[in-house]
Length: 291
Image (cartoon, rainbow, N blue to C red; front, side, top):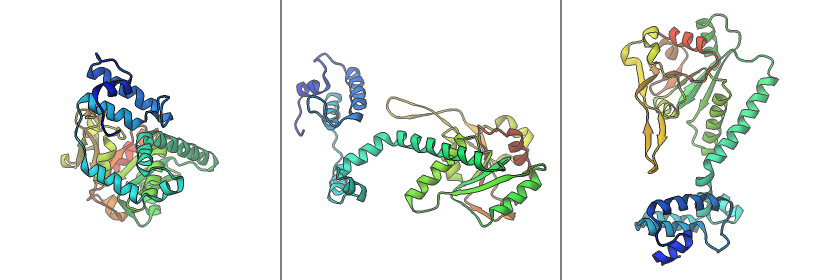
C-alpha cells in the first residue's frame, strides 16, 4: 500500500474520525498482537497495512532509505533458511524479531529440563559451582577445582565450568548463552567469573547480588569494587529505566587466583549469583580471594 489517506488509515485500524493519538496507539498494540497468529485479517489487510496506517495517523513520515535498501538486498540474496522455507526473508526476519523472547523462553525451558534430568542421573551432585563465562579462557578447569577445594574446606565435589562466548559461530554463542541462562534459572550456579563486558551486560539484567552491605566484611581495596545499575523498567517510548548505583562485583584481574590458574580475561570480575542456594560458600570463596 503505497498511497494512504487519513480516512483509509482510520478504516484499516477500525477507528472513527474522533480517535486521538492515544486511541491509535492502543489500537495498534491490539492489532499487532492479533497479527501474530495470522498473515491477513478477514478484510484482507496485513500487519504492513496496519503499520502504514499507524504511521500516517501518528504523523510518522520518515522513510529509512538505508533500511529499504537493506531489505531489498535481503530479498535479492535471501539466507538459506528463507530459501528452504520458501518465505519472504524480510517477513522471516520480522518473525524472529517479534517472537525472539518466546523462542528464548522455550529453549531455556528445554535446557532447564535437560539439566534437571542430568542432575537426577548424576551420582554426585556439585556442592559448589563456579562458572567462567564470556570472553574468558583457561587451560585446565581441574586445576581450578583443586584450588577451590583448598579455599573451601569440606567441599567434596566442586564444579568448575567454562562457557565461552568467544566462538565466531553465532549458533554456538546462542547455545552457550542458553546453557548459562538455564543453569542460572535452575539455581545451579554460585559464583561467576567473567570479562568486564560480559559483567556489565549481565548486571543490568539483575543477575548478581549487590555487595553494598558486604564491603566492610569483604575488605578488598576500594578501587577493586565494580558498580553498575540494573534495568528495572522500560518507558512507553522504549527508553530503559535503571535503578540506583550498586556494587555487584570485584575486579580480580591481578589476583593470585587468576594468575595461578592461568585464567585469561579482559579485566576478570567475580560476582555472586543472586539466587544462589549456597550463599555462605559463595561469600567464603569471595573472601578467600582477598590476598
